[in-house]
Image 1 (spheres, one colour):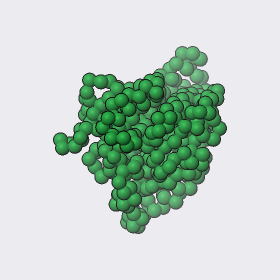
Image 2 (cartoon, rainbow, N blue to C red):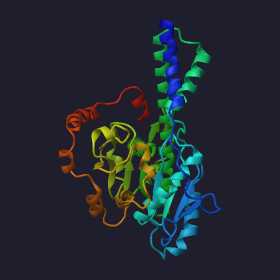
Image 3 (cartoon, one colour):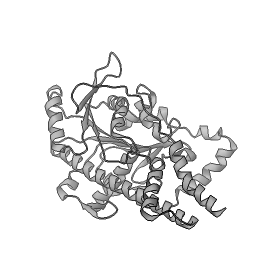
Image 4 (cartoon, rainbow, N blue to C red):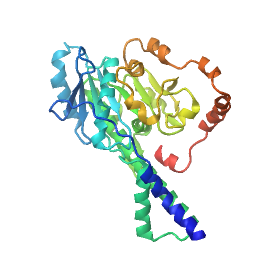
Length: 363
């Protein structure tokens, strides 16, 4: 009986990994023949929105020079309006570009001249899909566990490894983002940022750089040049789909943002726990009734009012009026079923507990 339970414990993650799949997004934009540029036309009557794709290791100076050479002639001497979009983790490189219509719609709603779309070195396989491979590798290296305690320790070690890999990815992305913002600042360009999922976590980690001049990848500290740190400035920042509880935005980061810093979350707490968490510190959490599930943010309809609302926060016209129209009203809460009214206070209390173990490794 004990051996049977051990077998079930080992096979369960494998079955879960095989059974769970990630919904694929249909590609909607082919773009032109230049790999670094895409032009997305949201309607037949609208002008195409330029999007500059930034390679994972492409020098930022070349990116800025390329944008200036291409766009400056049509700006008539005014400052270039630039928006950054940060994608999430667990998306294969070939699938990242499926968010282009959403990125273009954000740029149009925010009245941007160009949207910058960097590729980060995030893990491209969700943990529940990669877990069987990790367990198999551990079993081959250490032999088959002979007790339930050994299996649990194997699972804990695998979770810690996931945490360290994710922490390293977000740390290096935060350093690269700081370098990019500094490169734009040297050319007198101050971008706005829209950060989704793991990229929103990168924004929080950017605050560590502002506070300490370095941050850790889980093993060693990564130093950041003082000239880079002093060149980090942003206009407006919008985060959505923040993936972990208890993220803390530092005052030093907020001082580098001249406009709003808004974290858009679902109105109800249990929806937030589906992967759209609150942020703490120098940021405003904006609850909205229309917030989708975590992975569905980049799949919002480009012509929909939700994307228009996000774009308004990113720097579009009259963001206050736009968000009043689409934000959640407290009157909806009174109409909720009794179960939700009982759950919300408990859920809000859970938000205050600091995450343990792997969550600390991730954030």
